[in-house]
Amino acid sequence: MEQASPDSERLLQPATLEPLGHPDAELESVVGEEAEGAREDGSGDGKMTENNFWLKKIEISVSEAEKRTGRNAMNMQETYTAYLIETRSVEHIDGQSVLTDSLWRRYSEFELLRNYLLVYYPHIVVPPLPEKRAEFVWHKLSADNMDPDFVERRRIGLENFLLRVASHPILCRDRIFYLFLTQEGNWKETVNETGFQLKADSRLKALNATFRVKNPDKRFTELKHYSDELQSVISHLLRVRARVADRLYGVYKVHGNYGRVFSEWSAIEKEMGDGLQSAGHHMDVYASSIDDILEDEEHYADQLKEYLFYAEALRAVCRKHELMQYDLEMAAQDLASKKQQCEELATGTVRTFSLKGMTTKLFGQETPEQREARIKVLEEQINEGEQQLKSKNLEGREFVKNAWADIERFKEQKNRDLKEALISYAVMQISMCKKNVSQFLYLIVREVS
Image 1: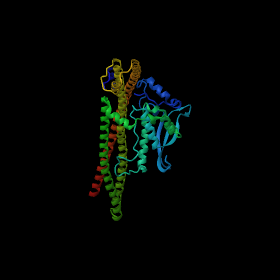
Image 2: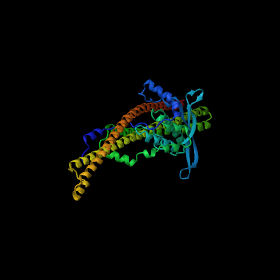
Image 3: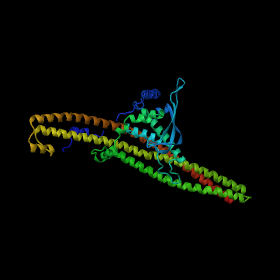
């Protein structure tokens, strides 16, 4: 088949979708003044800047987790964990609280919210959820999803997810997100009524676009490599951190045994009892501090895991762009084919093999009236195809523009967060080393004396 015409080739340029969610009147009353103020300040050319929108109006927290028992969609008994979301107004109007609410949500409802955001905001790097099942865990920790330590870490991760969405200049204004925080009953039905499942792209379609797109945007190709590298580096850091945690746990066990030995020894040796008892207490205090450090270790690990999962969010944006580019190329190819058919009918020459050409040879030429009718139909289809191609091209260009703006926002956030996390982790390790040194000096002094 002949290649696309020059006009079609010009339209085949790597091309943000307009945000599809809208806040309702009540939400506008809460945050409308903030939005207007940001526009008047000229910050971001009318767009909300991070941390100056919802989080200045309300406080969001996931305050506690509770194990529950109920029946699932298949009417089978199941045990699950529910999380209490609390929202409190920071400001008051006429002495009345603008927004004060609390409700319980399951992890599956958080998943539903994120899936909705992925569909309606494909150009945005949607914040990831914490892991549903324990993965990349340090092997001394329990991998049980109902383990209290794991549930607590997931509670913190879910709160962080809500804060990430609330601080995003576009996602924070979505009506479904607002209802997630304020409407406990029938929220799932409200989400499903949006029909977002029908708008979701199938994995098979996305995979097909990945391998068949002819003119991939180099920027998004590089972004895929960037996400792969980010995932690789974070995975390596998590493995190294696990080895460090193992060694730290070994130190913890050794010093824990020291404390027990000194305590038993003090009971036997009456003359040295007070000194040994003091040493045993000193070791117990040290072991307890190591236990706190181990908990901090897991907190830093969860910070790294968040960006491990962010890598997949970046790839989701790339896949959506590939789908749009593939649809654009298919539309251009179909338009070029129709133009060629119209030209062949008008000139009476067939330049490529076709079933229609073989039929004509076998059963004779069409009458002029039939040919004119077919040409007219093709011309109408060509006009529709050109409009469709222009529309897809504009949509693609807008997608690239908005996606790239959000990717730059994400990179700044990532650099800031990882820098702070790694510095804090290094400070924690230095503090631990100082405690180790002081403890060994204490043992040496006790031995000499």
